[in-house]
Length: 208
Image (tube, rainbow, N blue to C red):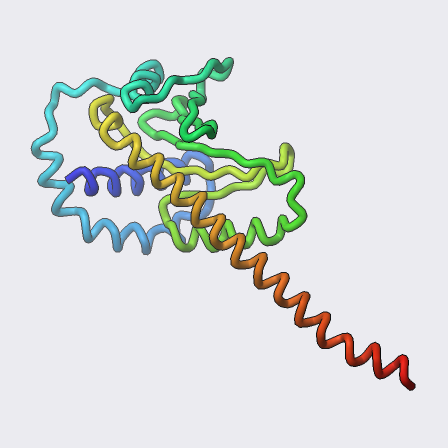
């Protein structure tokens, strides 16, 4: 039943943030959403009928409590709309400014990467593979951002599903890393083969 709620929340989150940001990608997501909806609709109805009406409504202040309830300590920050915390030595963020819409965020600097074209191609491949997230690039500060969206209304349910969203975000990072290494290997192999093909031509020119 938890899985049905998570899928439904992620679907609602994607639709919410597509509408909120004005991004014109709704048609692209609709086919995948219809497919998932048909699989979880019955489970969702049954689960929602058993949800207690006494659950605590999620507020920006209570997002901190959800983070703590999952064993993390929110880090000091001057930005009240984004709460930073550490997991496995890395800093992650959870948004509080668009409740019940929630955004999980992890950013990486790509300023020193010489293969930015491969980074962006791997991002496209990742989003095709994992429908629930988005990868964006900021040219202003050279940050590649991984994002997972959801809609959560209660403290109790968000506490239960928090780590599931975190694992989704981790899966996106791992998937992107896989495609990046694959494309980089293909690029290097192509260069090596191209070099071998050019060597006979150089020898022929020298002899003639």
